[in-house]
Length: 125
Image (tube, rainbow, N blue to C red):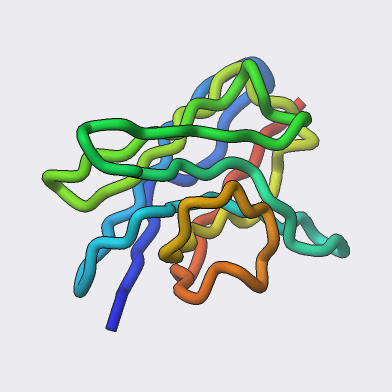
């Protein structure tokens, strides 16, 4: 059974940065992603990183965060990270880490079978 726990959320001013961490235990999966859910909105894809072997990671992003957010993973620690720079009030949401086995670049919630409880990120203007 895979367990995911997020950390690193908090309150930051617009233009600031935060780094989220997702600690994964139980199994190592090859696709780790981040999603977010703002109040009154549906959960949406943010970014994901696929490990395809031979130390090769492939990252893909939602258009709204590309260039500001960077996803990475440490395979030795079985941990994923989301570095968020130049944060905007629109980035305020609960951020969830998710995991799946799959080499395709899916952005669909339904394709990710394991989820963490989430961490709150609040960006003030």
